[in-house]
Amino acid sequence: MSVELKDFRGKITPETDAVLEAINRTTGKDKSEIAREILHKWASDQIDVASVLDTLLRREGIAGIGGGK
View 1 (cartoon, rainbow, N blue to C red):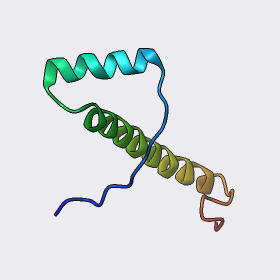
View 2 (cartoon, helix red, strand yellow; view 1 turned 180 degrees about the vertical axis):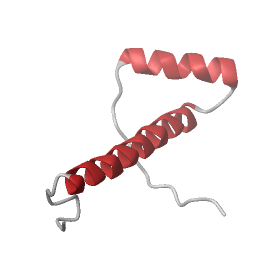
View 3 (cartoon, one colour; view 1 turned 90 degrees about the vertical axis):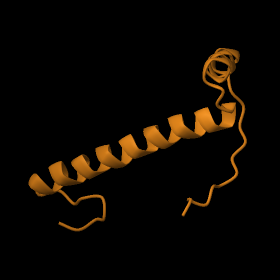
């Protein structure tokens, strides 16, 4: 079962476009697929950071991400 994808449109720098184009030419992957994979990896990393931050805050007795202790 595949994940439902959300539509996103945004502008990128010429350097970013050139890198995406180079990856496209060497791998055959669509530029939007490459960008989606990169953004997904970044988002997953941010979720991991938030989880660690929540643990550290709670360990210090500070309200965590959910506001509870």
